[in-house]
Length: 157
Image (tube, helix red, strand yellow):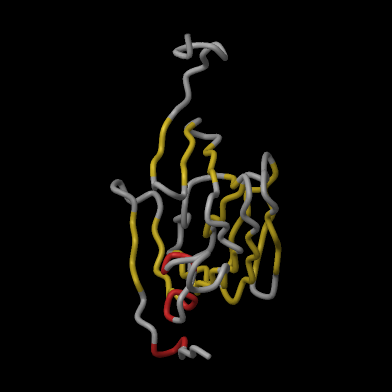
């Protein structure tokens, strides 16, 4: 059994280059050996993070996963969850899930940090799509790109 104490974990801070996206997080599952430490050969297949998003910021861009499920449990603060084209107000005590294929984003609309637990199943071969910027991403290797349509036989004969 691997064990950690959330109160003793250090906050890791992250911010996008222009500051639109920002968060601090405690990598709870990373402390006890999650997918980033070797799943499926070693570790476990899920992710648990304690996340704090500053007022007026979002933790990440609007995106969807082709395989990953994400469960959010709001501990404090207020915000808006974008789910596809909908916007839903969220507050302390709310819990909600985003299934694979559902674009989502969590935005802090309050004056205090928005704090929540994020629980995800972290499949090892997930693909992401970002509707606002029309780009794709791969978990492994960590690459982001835009697609150009070609004919099925292009480059094959």
